Length: 598
Image (cartoon, helix red, strand yellow):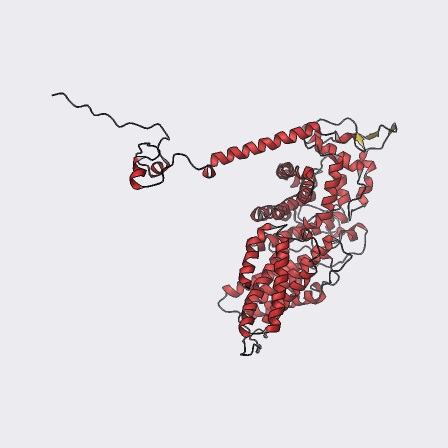
């Protein structure tokens, strides 16, 4: 009898099994359109991953998109007119290799049309060292623009002087939103003449301009400038940690880091913004600028101060203007740190109680050798009962100082709210600190100047935000307590409130009303000039109003109900306008609509 030879099972080629059998690690017969197992169990049988789940396909598409953009940039570079032929021409443009970048623009400027030799560029633009710009000159600064354009060209970015003029005009107009605190004339002098320019700052400035630009040609540079900003910051971080010893300006590097972090907030990329803000704060701490407890430059001279305020090896101000830049820049960093923390639900990278730097003061006072306040007031004194009446009096503060004090008070109000929840019993010491914070907030509200016509968009933005932020501090401090206070009568009247002193509910309602009144003044203003944190104050007030509207309806309080409904409409209407600039707030707008439930 002939033996039967068993035929081995057919082996499928690799990756021929269906996705379901492959994931279950079972044998598949590879049948089409369905394999045997899927047909028997009535399952969906697929042999290729959907396009949207293929990571490789996504990466390939992204690479292709980047390659297309690179080709477009190269084509634009080939067809662009040389920047050197504009206004001020620069002879003997050096090689673009890294080895030659430090000697850029060391040769003089020539005016071929006149046949006369002009003075070196550094001399022709020396006036910048003594002048700051409240707005960029309408005629521009041709020599500066040509020099910087040539410098960018050597870096592979052929941005013409005319485009550069447009970008600088846009940036100077919007700089208040970026946290920019430097002397603009000195910055332009550094970027056009220095052998060690802070190109990270130049790229960050132009990046911001691209974000706000309406012209498509200007916006086309945004992606390239973003990558250049990040790479320059990273490549020069070691030089920056030299704190100026090698000729590289560490303060300008810090400013570039801050502008980059704010750029991500502009793009509604909140966690990235907070990440880069944290990096900025850590560098500021390493520099020691959170310990600048005097505005007097003499206090930082080792020969005068036997115990220097800044440790050796840390950054030292070279003159009064640079000291003013550092003080104001530190507070610009802290403001974005606090705002980013609130919006992301994260603690600040630098707790305000660790800061001893004096409050910001206008840079013009440092430039003109005016009498500067010789106080050492900082965060600690804002809540100190012995000094709060003076420090919380903001009637003479500039707009930037108003805003940072309001943000610090929001921070402390939030801390009290957290402690209230976490502590099983509130002690008399806690209530005393609560009262100190409440007094500082109230003192601020009583003395805050109004915002009126005749102010620049930058000042209006800071003042409006300061007004709404201090009211937000009231809501943060009293909001939870107000929930337990009102005892509603049968006719809709309010009886006496409970502790503390029965005022929390009334304070919260007044704060919401103030926020709505301030917001009505913005209905004819371009909201793209407003900082995105203002939306947080609107959301905070809207959530309180939504709760109270429901209660007032139950109690039939017609007059109060009508007022709150109108305030709610004002907030919602402006939030909808704000979405055009920051669409990330759309979910909160939907929540307000749902909470209103009209």
